[in-house]
Image 1 (tube, one colour):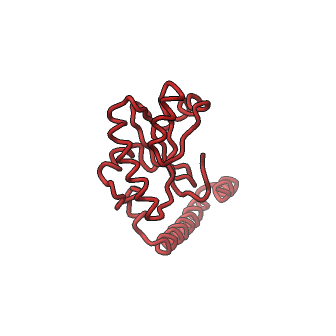
Image 2 (cartoon, rainbow, N blue to C red; image 1 turned 90 degrees about the horizontal axis):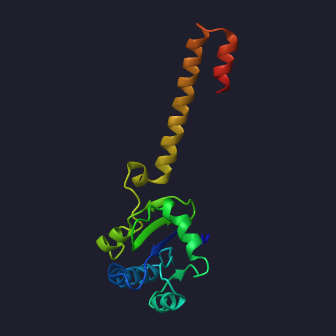
Length: 173
């Protein structure tokens, strides 16, 4: 289900007889259309919990995104439930399509709290995510250099106390 031109994709599992799903689907459709207008790389893949093809088609007609076909739904759903902690519906997960990393398991709350996608794609705000890539690369290089220096100093200390074969073993690591 991953397309290399799309950075992010997500899925929703819901059906037309579910009141929370009926309330959330128009909100999600508005969000989806807004993200498309802003040229955000986003795709939604709907995994239906409808019982019949007729219900599926009727509800899917209201959606601007992709869907898993009825023939494959149960197999896909069974694979997704344990991986993405699906406990109820609607359930929305944001996934980085390139890495497969989960961005959030609580996409429904994210969309409801940020319906215009101002903070989209809602990645964690760690210091590493806030640093420019050039600074991040420089820090990583400095840390690696420090690790090598410390490793050399440790091996120097060990060589004074350990037999050569043990020192060589540590040098290989």
